[in-house]
Length: 410
Image 1 (cartoon, rainbow, N blue to C red):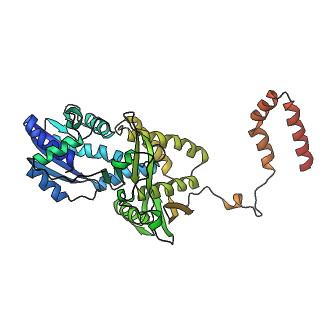
Image 2: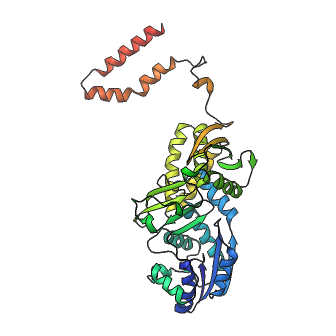
Image 3: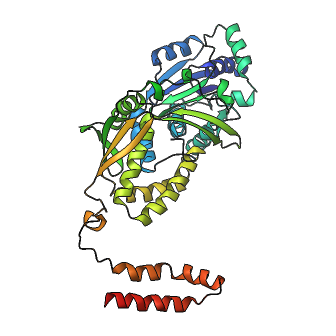
């Protein structure tokens, strides 16, 4: 039996690599996909081969991740339940896609992953694999064989598998870093500073604010502080700049796909900064009707991605709407980074619907008398309903207002 294993080099997948050789007599091919995590990929490869992998692949997918997944997320202002920028959720369908490509290349009998039966990733991996390669068998040893962290630690020690005894379960990529476990499982406790790596606490951030300008073309960031950058470089640079000002710490109660409520802690400096800037630029260039409807679309888009439905046709249909709207979303946004906050303080665009001649309190060409008729018609039904409920004479009220307005005009 030939199995392709999504391999991170951590406790779960290292134990699974060995177990599948023992239990299934499998030839295991390991695959590690680089989506921006700060790992030593050479050491991961060496570890996989040392403990029985017949072949190992390391795939650099950062550019594809940025262009085909993160760019879409930015345009969709993607925040699950208004908080989580979907870092892990966005990476899973891409990782699954690469695993499937190797499985087809190697003519494998099965694909394996290290997801538990409690989390979201099992849904994301399974559904992605089923969509891309429905005929292949999926093996999830942690879920199917009832593996637990303490049992895995003992097994690793007995088999000489080097693993670090970690308190926290961590996943990271270009778009963000998630931290779970340990004291974080008590939602009443403040996360200790030791869990954060990308962001400084507000107490330790610089005393002076820092300003960044972000240029967007059709909803996608293309330049930072006047310097053109590809999206990978721009995100990496902004993760550092915003992180040193404490921007991007997220602590919230999240509804998992499987129905469990969980306390989630994230770091996403670039994601939070870019989404805030992008959303502000949208308000500058889109009509209020487009903005109102797009909020609904953005929320549904985020829900689909979080819940593992990347390959759902609705997600592609929503992308089509978003891409049409985003044709107008070009311009530059100025953001102030200070003490954990990313505050939009300026914006410019050739497509702006803001007109100073209309907005100013000074003398302008705007005819204020136009508002009289608008107010009457805009609130007519509400006023009528309230008046009828209170047994007043609504039509007389409208008539008297009309006569008074005419007297003022004349």
